[in-house]
Image (cartoon, rainbow, N blue to C red):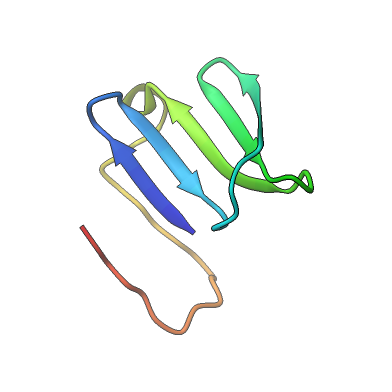
Length: 72
């Protein structure tokens, strides 16, 4: 899972898979879900993200990971 914030558009994209999105559905104002060709969720796009979520804090709990990679 990857989190990408684009300040020029104030958009947060949460990538759940490396698969290509072939369909999108807006489920609420400024919230779009992306699906692959099998209909599986591959990403979440949040427009006007700084008004919707706290971008200064990211926390995870109980994730089954062995290591964490931080990148800029």
